[in-house]
Image (cartoon, rainbow, N blue to C red):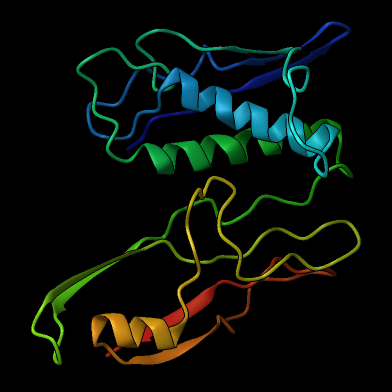
Length: 204
């Protein structure tokens, strides 16, 4: 959409401040994100840095402060559309990830594929005659670390209640044939360590 996202992360003795106020004004289309969703991105980043293996409690995010500007892409004013909020959310999460990596290059792996990569198709089941629709977020690769290749075929950092649907289930439920379901074997410009691979899915 041409909207520019800008983020500053400041570590203080008593707060972790994520400032998004210099990001562009809200999009005239559906690529906007609510303030609350922007806060969630910052929460996830803080959890990754501080205590990724433990549960959250009342103190986990107490020191987190997220600043947005009313009327901006991260705090849009009504009647702004947010139909593709999830793509903006993933990109913001990756942007914050990148900002941290500049100061703590060994704390996190490189960024990930940063998209839902949704597959949408529909039709009539050949056996039952019932209509079906598939709205399927896809798996992608995560970035390499300073000592290992990135993870392959994982959901993005913002996926919620999404499951990896097996080929057999898809064929039975939708009446399609999954011709191929494999890791993407295209070269990725790898260096000493390469990013993880996404997937290739072919339906018939």
